[in-house]
Every structure is written in structure tokens, then in C-alpha cells.
Length: 128
Image 1 (cartoon, one colour):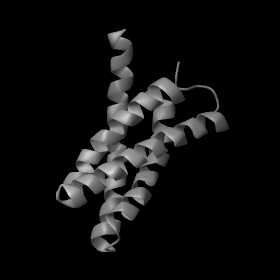
Image 2 (tube, helix red, strand yellow; image 1 turned 180 degrees about the horizontal axis):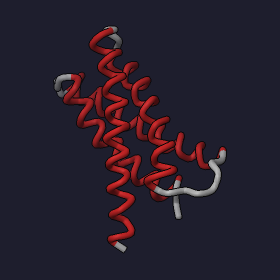
Image 3 (cartoon, one colour; image 1 turned 135 degrees about the horizontal axis):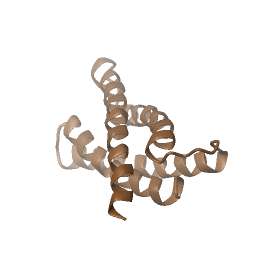
Image 4 (cartoon, one colour; image 1 turned 45 degrees about the vertical axis):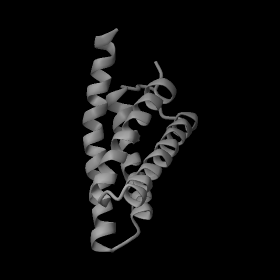
């Protein structure tokens, strides 16, 4: 049982590194270069990471062979909307209320969203 969970969890983590690079790259461009609001920047950058995440987690992490369908993508989108809400709230609380720098809040919020995403992807979206 443990080995069955370990491989997808490791692949999920590696895909997460790529998603995070996409997310942080776009977030940096929007906040530091274009001087956008951190929450608006987070929503856009997170959404770009989600598109990347769906493709790689579907095909590599959870190795789905059948064709993608609207129901699966809808579940994936809902899990990620919940995760986006959790991470946006975390950024707000950590930066506006706790006074942390924007990047520190973004990093901590990323860990929150990873936990929500893995659980939702494993138990709801790409369930075996």
C-alpha cells in the first residue's frame, strides 16, 4: 500500500515543482515588473500553473490512459478553485495581517495549496 502511494506522491511533487516555477515566474512578472496587486497576480499565475498541472498530473502522475472528459476536468477545476481560495486567503492573512513579505506569504500559501491539491486529485479527480 505504501509503495502504491509513494510513486504518485513523488511524481506529484515533481510536477508541483514545475507548476510552482510557472506560477512564481508569472507572479514575479506581474508583481515586480508590472506592479500589479499581489492577489490579482496570484489568481492569474496560479491559473497558469493549473493548466500545466492538469496535463502533467493526468498523463504522468496518475497515468490516466482513457481520454480526458468534461466531468474529470470539472472536478479538477473545482479542486483547484478550492485550493486557489485556500492559498489566496493564506497570502492575504500572511501578508496583510501577519506582516510577512509577499514572497514568504506566497511560499507558505503554496504548501497549503499543495496539500489540498494532492488530496483532491488522488481522492476525487484521478481516483483509481
